[in-house]
View 1 (spheres, rainbow, N blue to C red):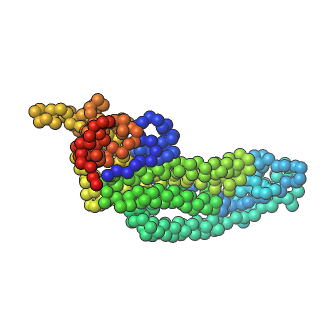
View 2: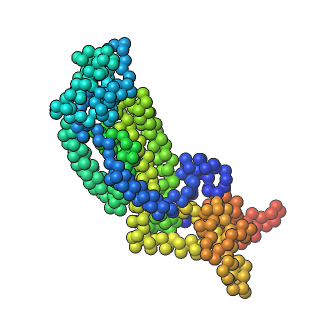
Length: 442
């Protein structure tokens, strides 16, 4: 009827929290508060959309257009980025100046149209100020006009790429798993994009082509984590309808438990180099392109790891459990457990039995509310979840089945196997000097 569980049984107290988390035997009820996950996800999406609409993006020169001034310092005479930004702002009267390091030179961008007479005069004033302040010849200071056409074209191509990507993903997951998983995966991926865009707009970093490229890269990371969990769910639910051990939701919850530590480890390892890239881009190199790419990847990986476990899988489970076949199977499992007086944890593993009180067994006393006693050796979570309604906890009550001891449940002994039948007087070993009591087989 049951299968042996992996690792130590839940509730023995012998394994630590981290040990059960790493081995997937923690039996944490991760999918139970999925309505809370949905509320959090919807709230973050709405807040992100509101931030984008109200605050907007800080468009880089590639999208908004402007002037780029490149300064090549003389060997042995470095140019400070902050000082260069101040000199250009004083000369042009525009404080919106961004300076970043590019190989052996510095690039300053500012929203000036140097193609007009006024813009050309301001750019010339800035070049003269840079030459006087840092003692550089004008030949080492160049200015060029940047149009926003290229950035807009990149944005259009990126939007088309995202749409094609989502359609391809939906078709693949539909074929590989089912349409419910496809809907959940696409919804989770779209949520990651929206929340990442909202946080990016809130921080105020420039929206550059590197940002768009970063958005495309986090799609693959988020989807990869989601597919791994879906694959484990499919493995745990294969042939489930022909068995009466677990419900579909419990099997899916077991899959999340088994892949939770893997998802955490993968996310942490992936975040470390991205965080280093962000620190280097902001503090050390001052490269706008580097920090733009690192920030969008950092946000996307964090949101993607959360979304794959707490949005995609719960949504797919909710859609699947609405099927009539899954509902009927859940009722059969629950009826079987009620008939056997079996208590289970969050992943469907047995943890104990319920046993009726003495009056209810003999029929001399009418059972009333609170008359059923519960015998369990598992955690309080599993016991409280199972002992609801008319059940009360009584650890001293005897087990419901003869010969089943509480120590057997704690040690993981298969207490559900039927005892081997024996016939009185047949096959019994006689005492020394006594004659056999049964017939000898020839």
